[in-house]
Length: 248
Image (tube, rainbow, N blue to C red; front, side, top):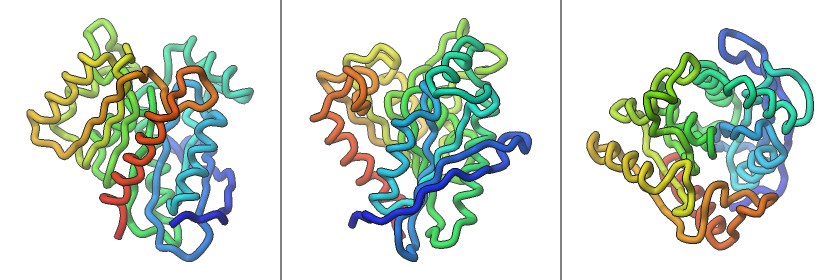
């Protein structure tokens, strides 16, 4: 069932270490109860694409929230803010986990919520969603779209990214869905193989789907990398996965 009526707003939540950050919220019309989705945005930032995807989840019957993980980098157009973040070497993993925890906590307090929360992220957001699900146990399902740098070499580790997420696989606390393009290099098919091997090693509940003819970002309708056939199938798998683990 789709919900053509919805309400949208920008709210302020207490992010990592209590720092106020903005978050975009979309709710379906009606009393619910509705499951919830926390969207973890990609390196292009708190962009129009993620605002649209937040509304897409509401249209499909989810209370959805997407926090501005780059709030601390100042105002401006998303591309300009993302450029500053990129030049600064990204944001600390711990800060993203703290901000995401605030979005999860906010969502769980909402009237009309059914008590179930899923995470959804792509690119760096997919990596951060997986990292969160390995470090926290307050979400019920996780979707990682082509999250790069889950597998990391020692030279990629630093104060902001002190551990490769794959090293935390044993602590994954919920079912995981992964969607990947076979023409991607970040993550490469070989890195996806490593990620899947770790999930199998620790007996985790997961499903990975890999798409020929697709590379990085094949959901992104505003970019040449968009692949409609693969994206349509991928979205269907996202909603089937969330329906399985978030419905009550």
